[in-house]
Image (cartoon, one colour):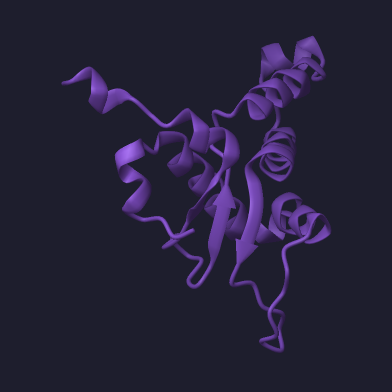
Length: 136
């Protein structure tokens, strides 16, 4: 394998990029930073340090794992979302408050999985991939 084939675009991971065609989220586009961005890594380390040592050793509960994942997505990954509608089919603008609901409420696991997917896609994007599944 060529070394160049392993290179990612670190600028996209930090600044974000649009991801579409997300499984189970038809019509939704998410502008996400890569899950390897510097803010994500710093916040993840901080949140893990806050967990009591005994709990870290014995295994972090699923509820705590979900809380951490949601905070990481809300605070460091999801920048914008297009295609959201209310129950009356009226467009909804993505706000931090709406993001908190979508990324922290267990009833919205489908959206949470889509946001995590978008962050992982951007984290792996190469410069050559920019023009392939991306619209700006």
